[in-house]
Length: 455
Image 1: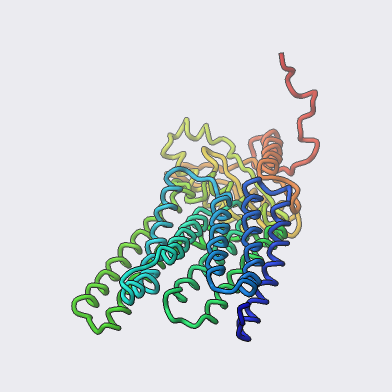
Image 2: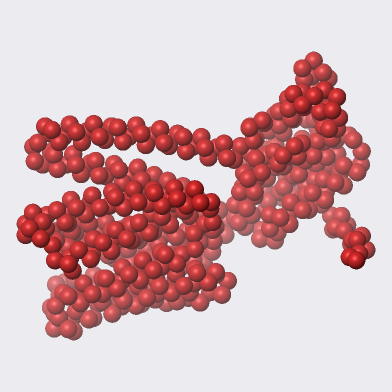
């Protein structure tokens, strides 16, 4: 039977308690019927991680030896790897998925530099070879690092973003602990327990977060949390090269080369960041008016409705715009649209997000309003601000039909509330060519008698 020191007894007892709690939390998440099947399978794999953890504590004490620790560690890492692979990630186009994979490979390459510095390199230096069993641990850690980075960069749907962040954070801590401990170095074992316990606690917190959806503030986009991961990996690799050059006292040539390589990497990565930011803004911005485009409108609306607070939507259609285009030309028409967008931007509250949906259609998302009257007041201010303007020497009257719809927490989807605002907008347009605004009412919904009969 294996004798344990006092800190090992405390650490193993803590890990055992976290394992029992984690099994219960992960099983509960895996049995939640409202979750997608792949997500439930992922939490089943996390439950297997904690089951391995529960067995890990008493097994070496009863059977003795450290080889059982190695076996259970491999099983734990394998189950966590399955969980990350089964976790349903956000749907994206082929280019976006490829970019996330390349960034994850960059992170893995940085991790391989860390493992070479802390684990593989020292072992080769001291013994000249590495046993196959010792190679499995770095390879498993690198696979975990790639899967966690890919998941964090791709992101998940709103309901699973916070659990995914906690799950990937646990993976990064586990990797960091293994790298710093090295398994092949003489670092005190008590530090390894600190990293393991932190990773176990984050895994348990992720399972709890999955079964307890947050109400209130919307979760941040997961991809934002991992945007700088590739840059961090490159920075860590260069810092290790500089540290080794400093330790060896050989700044010529390796220290200078490492500094120059670091400077080049910083400049290239910073330029890539600027290009990516410009590309992201262009994808969500209307080029003519500077407002958000339809994609931005949908994205903000989905995120706002997911917060579980009251939300208002304005759908706006300009009146008489076709006549302006036909009589004065498209150049003047474009300037009229830009003028209208300026009035819209100045009229809505600072927290609102105005957007151009296309043509002469506009919309506004009013997030986190306390009372429905705030949406009505926003429509009224816009209506009062519209009027005659001079565009290229022509006096043009800006007029629009505005539809207003408001939903309480968790009642309507994006499509449903936009449909209601559309109906209200058509009601306002039926009142004449002047600027009007209308509120959605049940009576605006078409009855079955109004629908055409199918042949």
